[in-house]
Amino acid sequence: MVEYTHARKIMYTPFPFPHAQLSVCFTSILIIVIPLLIDHHIDDALWLGTILSFMAVSCLCGIHELSRELENPFRKPPNDIPICTLQAQFNEALITSYAGFHPDSYFEAEKHLPQLMSNDDKRRQQRRQQRRQ
Image (cartoon, rainbow, N blue to C red; front, top):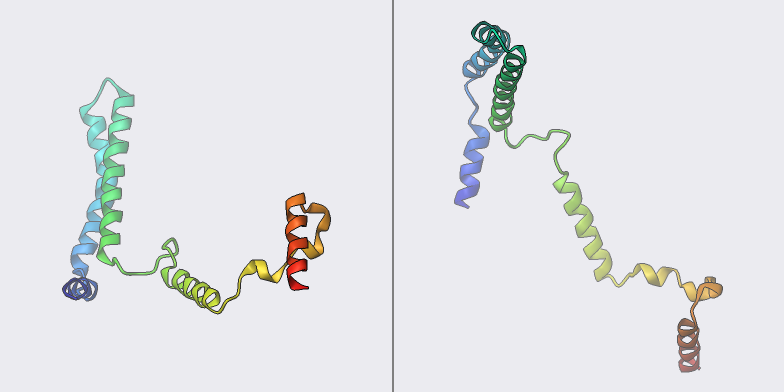
């Protein structure tokens, strides 16, 4: 119960909005400035400057997206697993199986598809019919 209380505190404590906005502004400025700084410091190898600036900007954008996700951990984005739906389907399957329904009892292949039956299946069917009589 203690962990639930801690998670609830995290969920209902908002992240400071000015801090989030400054983080967005800082990341936007760095996306423009970092390639220029790397280009200024690396004169000879253009490919090295391109790779370094791409990696630096990608890391900063990734950290920003991670912080946005951690800011609201209990939201419902479209790519989350639908746990409530899966649990409801599982509960329905449990109730159905507890009631005695089995999918194989609905369709008996021996009656409808005798040409697909093997010899063993035909013998079993004959034994069942003998037991019933």
